[in-house]
Image (tube, rainbow, N blue to C red):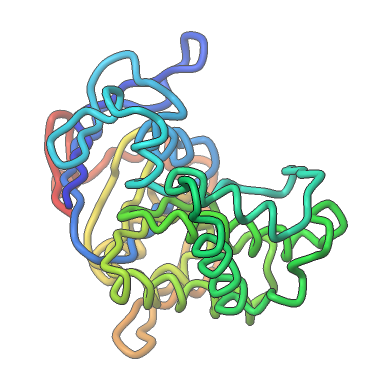
Length: 279
């Protein structure tokens, strides 16, 4: 399975949000997309999943443009878990998650679909919520239900937009570890947007660091999460220590205004326009 991002361009009104991104992504990995707010992280995964259509460029799944794949067929290949804080479904949890089986549903498949749904709820520790109304749940419970709905699609690629944003620290760790494990067990490529640099660094196989609508750096966590990169992309001063070989960030301060990221040029080792990176 190969996902090729071939220079998609997308703008809201006249403001470019996505540009100059070329990447080949494959393998059974957990990949985290990091970067400040507004740099195009969600827009990128929306273009991968055909929620948004770039005005030029393409996203190829095993050599086929996703724009040419029917929605139901694409849903068998790519699952998507949105940032769900404002989602509302007047359904029970079991029915909400069962929606994720729609791409695979056919006459007589309900028993099998329900079995997959209940297995997934148990794996996430929320089977006791099965008959509860989705709209009565907490934000953290919402997040787990939406994760369950993405997993029951049984996709080859799972895209997640801040899947741990509404979870407490213990459950952030549990969910991230589970996603890494599932990437191996289900031979699945998992791509998640994260704002927790340390959790992403600890569990991700690869990091995509975005800035100003493009990929600023990409690679193993210890190669991407550096003091220079954090200073340039996030505008923060940090100390990087080692946690069992993974980088661990200790924040110190913000960069003074005169040294802000807007005034710092990218170093030559970072991908430039037209470069293609492999992840």
